Image 1 (cartoon, rainbow, N blue to C red):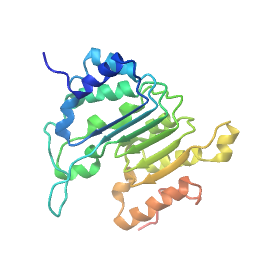
Image 2: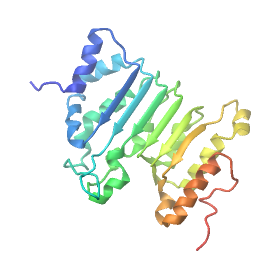
Image 3: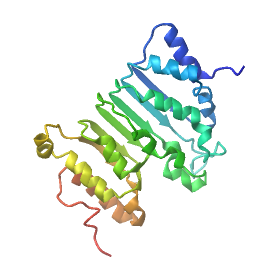
Image 4: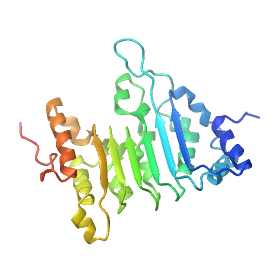
Length: 252
């Protein structure tokens, strides 16, 4: 019999003592420690996690890569078969269980270890960690704050995820892989419009951070243009300027 790894032990111990989690933070680095999730996919473990997280209010998941020594300070390759989604099946099931409870109020996801920067060291495809899997059937009626860092998004599915939510939203180092930033900024501006939302009986979406956008139109920009438009994007969604900078880009 294979011994249950750390994440397999946690719910059973807590459940036996009648303890319910209200906040759960997972920090993983580097990739070769991910075998800690090995037994999370077991049915018994998943049932135990479902039980002890039914009152979960805050969930924080962070995956950081380790930088190498020396002047380059590049992300280290510490794993193999990065592109094989089956390698992360246990972790995926854990995230699914932890994020299905209706009690969640705050969610923070940072997938730095799978970020675009890491592509430069040829660690393989990242499609298993496209963020779209996370927006499927997630009602979260009590959600108040959503923080996303180093994730890949679809403009359409992101809009579905936000819906009519009256929350605080922070986006950092987000890559748009389907759709365009132009349409996404328009959508965010509409959702932050106090007058328009008020007419719908809703409070405006509150965007706390919007930094380091990438993907879509950003791929075609030079460094100077990217820096200017990134700053202008924040001004646009915060209603500090009228024109969408990704629509009114200066011609060459």
